[in-house]
Length: 291
Image 1: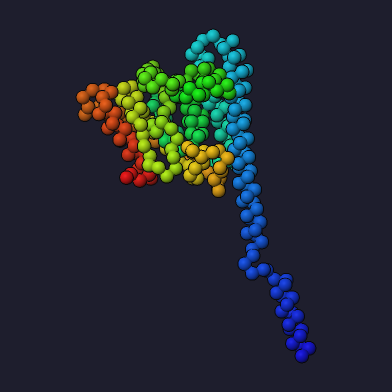
Image 2: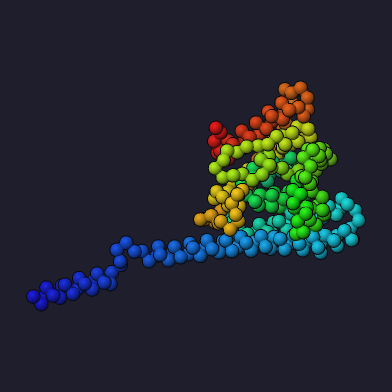
């Protein structure tokens, strides 16, 4: 009887001192870390954009006014302003990676020939796509919305860099073509706006029309984000994805516009054919299924 009671006490002790059924302490700790990581990334994203705005304001009210004062040559001032903006955007991207908001990888820059101008086109999954592209191609032209020109934080940047204003669609096409014919590179998003997660990729005709009329070499850039909804259209910046997103940017070999089977440069038929070709290229390489 004594031995039975002793064994019973030993079993009770083993039960109380052993792990609770269905409870994993490391999992519980991991859940806390996951939540902390999520809230940190939300905070760090907001901090990143606050610093972005302050940086734009600093350039607009101090740096660029000094450039206007001491550098009289318009082309030299534009060149310096664009290099400065490209460097600032590069710092911003590295800051976002440093605080854990994103990771990123850029490849294919070996396809870019120094001294050659390109029509740089890219799909547009996130808000910071243009930041990446301007940091990669700092001397290129790009189209800015009228809201940016009127924004006190970015107005000075837009004026100093002399980017193309996108307010007037009627003049936008000719302005883009003129810049490319003058030897500048140009960054365009054929979608015209950010992608909507889950919707089929669609291109407007503008980029194809610019390519045909300017006869510029097209430099396709593929942008992919590992987490759908990160800084995408209709998704607020504070809705961070469950995991830290990885942004992959792949520069592809240049494409040449082909007019040999068309009746005239800039025709609508040529534009539609090239647009369809570009769209198929992106759908295939981004693994976006065509309906």
